[in-house]
Structure formats: C-alpha cells, structure tokens
Image (cartoon, each protein chain N blue to C red):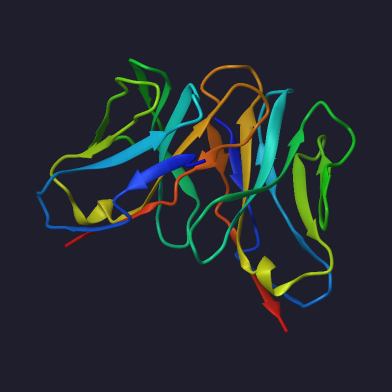
Length: 112
Length: 116
C-alpha cells in the first residue's frame, strides 16, 4: 500500500541546473498537486492536475513545469534552478469528496 | 481568494494537559471543508481531523476535537491529554466544497511543544 511516492528525498542543485521531481500514486486518484514549503511556513500550491492531460497553475508556478500523461504520475520539472527554489516539495493526491490529501514524504531541495 | 490565518506561531503545553490551537479563515463561500494536519519532525503530513461546513456538530477524533464557528470563520483544534508524540507543526487548511480541483489553502502553521 504505497500511496504517494516521491523521489528523490534529498537533492542539492547548482544554480542554473535542471531536475525533475518524480511523483507516483497508486490510489487511482484523479487529482494531484505539487506544493512547496519554505522554512517555518505553510504550503503553497505550485501546480495541480484534475486528470491525465490536464494541468493548471497554482499560487507560485514561476520556474516550474508539470505534465500528467497518466493518472499515476505527476512529475515536477525545475528549469534553471535558483536559490529561491530552495524548499521542501510535497506531492499529494486526492479523490472525489470531502477528504483530505494523501501526501508524499517530501523532497528537500537545496540550490547553491 | 480564500486565506487561512494561524495567529500562534508557537504553543507549548504540559504533558497530559489540554491545548487549543487557533485558526481563522476568510471566504465568501458557504460550502467548504476545513482540515487540521500534523507535521512531525519526519516531515510527513498527517491528516488529524476534518470538518464539513454544512455540519453544525463539531468533529471529534479520539483526543482531538474542533470548535467550528462558521459565522466567526473560526476553526480551532483542541488536543486533550497531550502526549509527547503530539509535538509537531500543525496546519489548518481550507478547501472549497464544489467538485473540481479541490485545492487546499494552508495557514502558516503552529509549532506545538509538549513539556514532560
């Protein structure tokens, strides 16, 4: 019963490098999300998806891209990493109805 | 846009005592859901309790209960018989009820310390 799986758990990037954060869920949820959590702060929505092939921007989308080719996978792409992107990134999924999210365990990203 | 405010950055309580964490929110919607999440040092986000706005009865989950005041747009979390394992960041979150993207809006969090 994996739930939401995020990889990697930790990563250090140099300024200007790119990387993809992977997210996979096995609950057949239609909705998937990417959030970032800066130190001592709440979570802010980067991008979300309501189903395969459909994505939309959240509150803080600049510097990121996403795709949703399957129900299970929702990778987050960072292009030209900047120190401001140092954060903890959470992927989450949810089904229909009054339920909360199922979260992944997070990725701690440091850009130096 | 909806906003969620947690006015207590930090709280502490003696083990076995009761503590209440505050949360207020701003919305023009009448139908929505509210949540409390716990984030221990492991970083994992754990759902503690949820409340549906159309329900007048306050939600309860074992030692955790809420005081939902819809008119005041207030949603506080009460933890009874506090345990060392309750030490964590607690986040209040809001979600619109109509089916759709179901985006959660989070507050800034309250760090709860349990003193033995």
